[in-house]
Each structure stands twice: as C-alpha cells, then as structure tokens.
Length: 243
Image 1 (cartoon, one colour):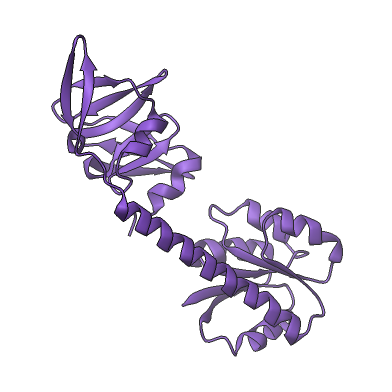
Image 2: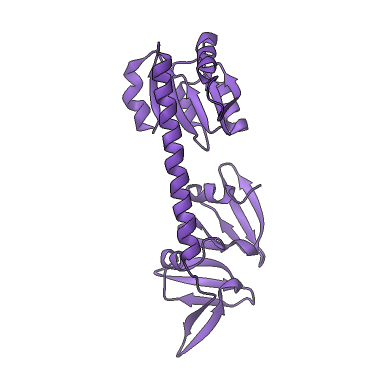
C-alpha cells in the first residue's frame, strides 16, 4: 500500500485532499503537517511514498522542505500560486495542482502517480530478469609479474581505485592489482554481492563488519578492519541493506 503525507497550512486544504483520496484504496494517509518545519519532521519520520505539498507556508516553503530532505518521495504540489509551476517541475514533481482544483483534476494527478508506479515496477522486473540471466565469474585471473594467478571472487573483501587500475584487497591479506579500473570491475562482478559505495571503491557485502552513520553518509568497517568511506551519491545504496 502506498503511504501519503499531506502538507498544507490550511485545514480546509488538507481536508479536501483527504476527501478526494477516499476512493483510492491503494493509498493510505499516514501523516499531516501544517507548516514547513513539521513537514520535514513528518516526511523524515514516516518516509511516505507520496507527499501532497503546499508551497507558501510558515517555517519553510515547499521547495525549502525538499532541500532539507535526505530522500525525496514522489511530490504533487498543491498551491494557489501558479508562478511556481515551472520550478515545481524542475524539482521533478509529478504534478502541480492549482487551487481551487476539481475532483476531476485531482483524479488526473492520481492517474499519473499510478502510471508512474506501474512503469517503475516494470523496469525493476526487467532489471531483475536481466540480472538472473547474466552469469558472473566465480574466479578471476590477475597478472603478477610474468604469471597469472587465480583469485576467488568471494575472497575479495573490497576494491580500491589505483590510478587507471584497481587494488583487490583479499581475505588472506594479499593486495592484487587488476589491469581493469573500478567501473569496469563493477560491470563484471555480481551486483548482489558487490556494492559500489564511492567512485573509488566497491565492497563485498559479505565482508562488511559494521556501518557507522555520519550525518548523511556512512563509513564501513570491513572484516579485515579496513575503513571504506561511502560518498553521499552512493549513500542510498547502503540504505537498501538496512532492515
């Protein structure tokens, strides 16, 4: 079921959205906010799938609310100010409801949400099927002086960028240098086991010892006690591991 938070500084505005949503059984209202500060708190706490967001509010404007969120859900703006329409779509809002709006106009916005979700579900299914079809190597060959040595993929703890090449940190303490860079290795390794956490590093999920949260990102302690930093642009990938 899709969860919704309604943000509007007017009680009448929140009530109208609740009435219009009454016919949509696949959606559940989990919270409300009447100003920008409350909006940030509710959205952060509840992690809704969809937010109906007013723009001109006490505390923070709707755009300021979005700038303070670590993760931005799907957004439908609901406002009486049409001059914000262009900016609304610049922040990838799914729709812009200009008050006063009719039930028919509201329904069109909800149809956009449902179509968008169907498309996302289809893309996820295709990605999943493609991943299952792809065969990933269990062992790789690394050139060492005049020889080629075999390294089991499961023994790689993490991968570190090394100029145009990459260092492979392994369970026996050896560090091997691959002729491939981090991006190329990411394409060759099973994404269900190896996670890119920085433009310069990939970690083997099975060798993660612990995570430490730092504001909007993390550091990872691997089982060999190496510390790997997670960049903000990859922080959402780490969150997928947290239950």
